[in-house]
Amino acid sequence: MKGNFPIDKFRELRTPFYYYDTKVLRETLACINQETARYESFDVHYAVKANANPKVLTIIRESGLGVDCVSGGEIRAAIKAGFPADKIVFAGVGKADWEIELGLDYNIFCFNVESIPELEVINELAAAKGKVANVAFRINPNVGAHTHAHITTGLAENKFGISMEDMDKVIDVAQEMKNVSFVGLHFHIGSQILDMGDFVALCNRVNELQDKLEARHILVKHINVGGGLGIDYDHPNRQPIPDFKSYFATYAGQLKLRPHQTLHFELGRAVVAQCGSLISKVLYVKQGTKKQFAILDAGMTDLIRPALYQAYHKMENITSEGTKETYDIVGPICESSDVFGKAIDLNRVHRGDLIALRSAGAYGEIMASSYNCRELPGSYTSDELV
Image: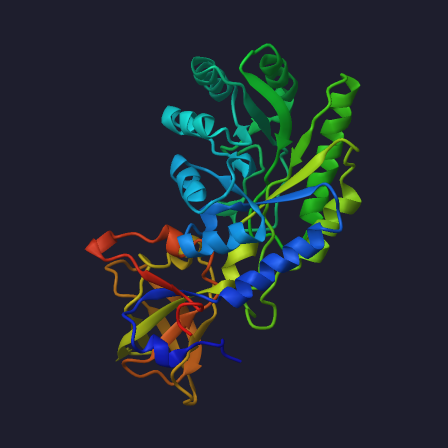
């Protein structure tokens, strides 16, 4: 079954472009709100790094979610989209001084801090402004995740976070500072995780660390477990909304949350991936010696995930009802890695056909580049193309 696309409208538009199905996005957000409403202390922040399209951000803001930002630019995008500053968390292993000052100027909810040197800079910059910054410490839990090596973040070998062995030290340092307020612990173990056992392992580690802190009479107001919930790239029509019920229930059942605590999540991919598709036009069908190629006008500059992660995106020829044939689907970029998929079965492809690369709403448009001096792809929502 193919996706539901306004093909006649698509034919009038210049390709490649991103198309966002707002019905899918709103239904996804409604499901998140429905599931988190079961648990009084759950608070979800959307991870802006997945997709910062202003039209998408506006719909997410309207749903009531907060935001997780990893740059000053993302903070500005969130504020421009209307997100309240007191719902913004600012993460990232390398925050520049101007980015920290921006967060301080907006009085954002919290800085997720990843090292003592960063903590010292935040304290110094806050002092200069006569402010006190809320900080949570990102602790590296050394918990592995069943996902691609490039998107694991919770192992000791990763660049992110503060080691568990240094947790007590960094908290002690913070408590001696006058311009930071220690309010929470932050964790994140990776992305595109479908095995709930990985989240159970994180819960167990958080429980262990909390017991250790309570033995020292240190109470933590906020626990932030990041995001990481994956989506079904193989069957975007069959499962357009991720398994939020199991995801939130796992934390509710396994994490020993204290009565005074709020549990924060930072979901990105799970919120926006399935609502987005990259729409591209076939430039040529090329017959090789042993295979045939469908050469698109979209390339790795428009959707880099297949080249960067060997990621799979379901592809559909949305303008052909011909019999299935097998193609290598490639782009026009002068790089051998500019390949979307090999040995892909599509309805018979002709020059001018439109190909939809599905589940591209996360880490698609936001990672586009102008390599080869190419223009960035455009974007449209289903609300605009009625």
